[in-house]
Length: 345
Image (cartoon, rainbow, N blue to C red; front, side, top):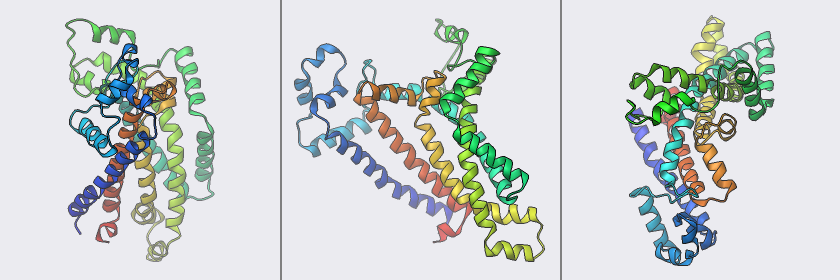
């Protein structure tokens, strides 16, 4: 089976998985009383007095299969996820906040992968040597640090103390520029670092990078430790295989054995962890976004859950399902690329 055929097959198999996740979310909704479910359609306090009428108008008393049909129609055709407590469409609110989360993960993921894989490979290839001992100590330290504490420490040092890297997505000067009538600015991607370059506003790019340094550092340091431990364990297992003994018997150097044989085979578990980790981060790095006031998806979902705002929670769950299905698909494709035996099977 070729790689293209394998990819198409995996895409087809992902469709029922995604549909199953959507059905599960809808099924959970059925356990909520109509008074809570109707909150998705209420935009102000006056409407709340007539919730039964609104529920009936939106089919909440219809048979379950009819409700599911209308729910899927609103979801797929109208992109209607309801209204949040502030009166904003949930789909729009999520899309407006998603770029902040994506930007943190976009710059944090290469750091996670680079540090995690590099330290994991060197630690596994040099078991019980100084590089292994140092890597293990750093990993234990990183996994022991609460993200909110680490973020506050960085803010205290580099913002309150030195004034270098402030919180939020951008400073007041940028906010004033973006909200000024007739300002020469156009949103292309929603990502400040990219849109600023496209618009030719280099000073906004510099400002955006300054605001990203600390949250990206927190994300990179804490999550790379998890990937490093997985990669180290996988390297140790790979180095104990028979084909490594054969490679050594052929006279290959240690560097060649590690790079050409052990590392490639050890990547499979690391790919799994990386894919699921990045998908999890894209659903919202809630604590990091809250500490640095980034106004991302995670912070939005957490606030909605605390106030029992049902519509954003449903929208967040659906977005998470899509991201995890897509990430699993990408992981499967990377599997097949790294190890052709998978697609041949």
